[in-house]
Image 1 (spheres, rainbow, N blue to C red):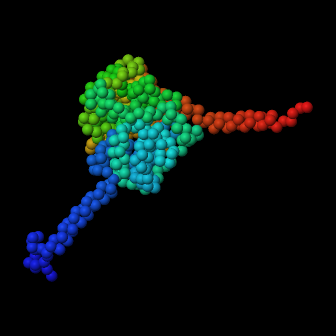
Image 2 (image 1 turned 90 degrees about the horizontal axis):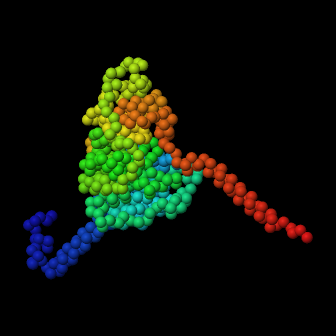
Image 3 (image 1 turned 135 degrees about the horizontal axis):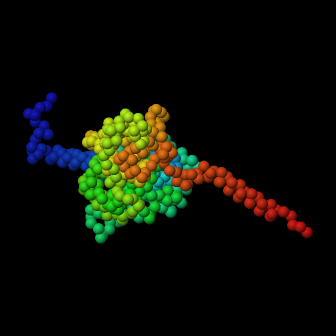
Length: 489
């Protein structure tokens, strides 16, 4: 048993150690250094990328709002897919983008990853649907693609589960058709800063146009469901919801908003006397925007405020409509006294407790006047909020409004007529009184909103294809018969 007083080679001073041992000791130190270097290199390879690159990729993935669509609701695993995106063509289920080799993107090279994100083509060559906003992500720089790849491959936890597959009706289930669509509508240019603009403006343009993909929701669509280049950011239908005009027009858009108000809205989803985020915008605030730096939010506000104004004929800003009402307090419980008795009683029983009897709201619930949902020219967002409710979490605060529309689980909730009646009451008392809602409008919103022409024609596509094939076969048979018919002498 050796102790510290026992003379060994190890506790001789270096100058008194035998020369052979000094050589061996030096070799040992070198080997230790090499092992340490190898361990460091191994850790680098195991993580796949420097930590700062991974951190940057994490921030970029947050800005791109990847989690919102690639994480299933109600406890889904992060980025494991399975989120059902309602589209006019049918429900599109997001894919697993964790580094699972069996079910996710674990076998993707950096080139495969970039091709999927920016070109909409998976590793196996299949085409993605543009519910994945690759038309915006196509502007991402090569450096940012490298950082995103590093994050997903090294920090995201692999999830070994296969999400539900997308099964659209014919002919939309033919993914190869997206190759032609991409030729028409997919830009291949990466973002290039405008040398005539400030660094802040360029940062905002890059965030808004590429990562946050604002135009994907806020631009109208053409007959083939591509963004209309003639009216960018002028507002567009999202099925049951409507993404409003966010150009710099002072009446139709956000020209009347200050930069501070825009930053506050993106950070919290709420600006008193103007708007509150619901539906897809609430998801964007919860999963993406609230996590961005103040500098980046300010840059987006600067850019949006500078966009080309697009007027859509609004008489005044959506948030300028309405005033407090005394009707609810005056007529509560009295039959035959309200212009819209059913809507009045629904409001009194279901809405007034939170939004107050005169519609002014409080610190928890928004005012119903000076509110973009009740002052808009289209009632879609008001109807959708009543039907589907509202839920967004900002920091530690959870903002919630229950859904009042009938569902498979709660068939005794408000009928389509009830929702129409209470919507009309709210519009008349607090919002744009020129807008009227019918039960058919409510049914349309509950069913996913207006269907584009190509979706309306889809049920006839198979019949048309069969008819076309029969015509071609008949023409070929006729031609063949003529060729084989014997000549007349």
